[in-house]
Image (tube, rainbow, N blue to C red):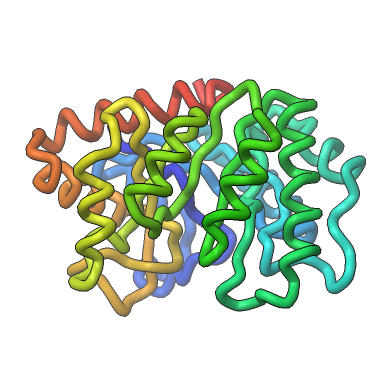
Length: 258
């Protein structure tokens, strides 16, 4: 069994499946995908991801506010976040984190919001899903400051081995997406070869970042198989071994999905 550990089911381009999310999920299931984690990115889509998790037995969700979805000038309220997290199908917090690539001027607000999500993680015991781009030092500093008692994941990882090792050293998992298949991603492939087998996850981040040979097309959860197959070859293991290990890692990190 495979798991798509990070997908945005409420944002998929469903043209390839006649506009049907049911058909898109069935296509993924037919390729061995047994669970999907639908990711929250804003206050507006929290209801949508929870509704999808309630609708499908093999879908769970997270709730949080992406650093690029913050309301101008204000972080989300902790009471709101804790209320949204108090739901049996919400298994994680986020995605949250820091993105200085697009909004470096919002660094202070992003840090405030990130700290709030990390506080919610401490209060609830749920793992945190971290987005980080061009904010390596601050991301690691805030994670170390939080000293979470439970693990989390750096999703759609695109940084170097130095950052990966630092995250692994504080208990985090590393999730790889279709980016690892891109021609110019050799530094990321170096990371992919070195991540310990018991800390690796796979994801699509669909509808974004479709892997080769689908690059340039809308991404779909079924393409997590291409990511897993590529990683298996890269790491010198069988596809079955990689699928089993990453699925076991997912269940360990997100125990409420079991």
